[in-house]
Image (cartoon, rainbow, N blue to C red; front, side, top):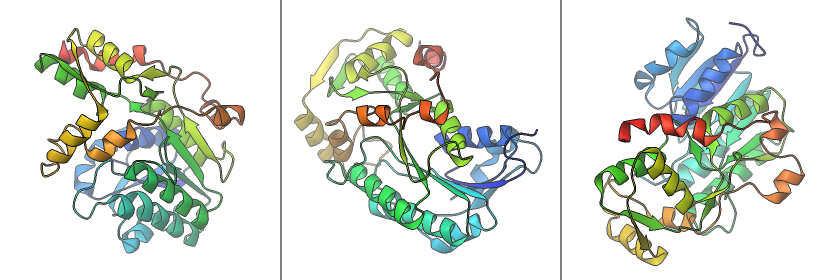
Length: 315
């Protein structure tokens, strides 16, 4: 198994997660050696079959602990940071992980003299965003570029793929509930396939992106929340009526369920705030070539070629 990596070593923080496993596969296919930096290496065994013997090595690291970051990066040619949280849990806060963790990884990469750093953020990251998540994402980007000015920042829209938490969740809801809750029906998204995001990460790491640049990643279609749910129902063989829930009521419900574990709560207040803004590639990014195409991915994967197959089980 040879390729553009030529045996170079990349440390991928969050390598066992949803996006991480696709990134690991992409790097392995191109001949890189991969160090998957994760909190629980014992749960990362699913990465091993993605490469040849000894090519992929899970190691323990936590972005809240600088010493563990330094150990994970030691000797690496490049670093990719995929670690982020969408809702806080205990010490895993937006400031500690999405902002502070991102800066800590960039600082360690600079001190280790790594050649490249790719940081995955999200469309909507902004200093004055309504959502704490989006503000922390922006702070993470700023910290990364301060510590490692040549880093490449990738901001994907809604990422889909067989392990995503969007389409299967709503498909399961359509199978069990008599009606489908509909919040922010006009909020717009530009869903992007996880495999395309992984290829963009690889391209940026290998120097096919402009250093110190923020790229916005979106697929070939812009769809509203209502349109996404319509397709989810169609692909899972359902036709439930919608129950329109105003955003203020959704926030109230989220606040009332705040004491429940994050896996049980349908939405957090902060996630409701995220729905107040569109998640699409900006016209400025398109004009400046800061998109998937700018990283060499000219034919984004269409949802219709992927999503129906992993929603088949909900029929």
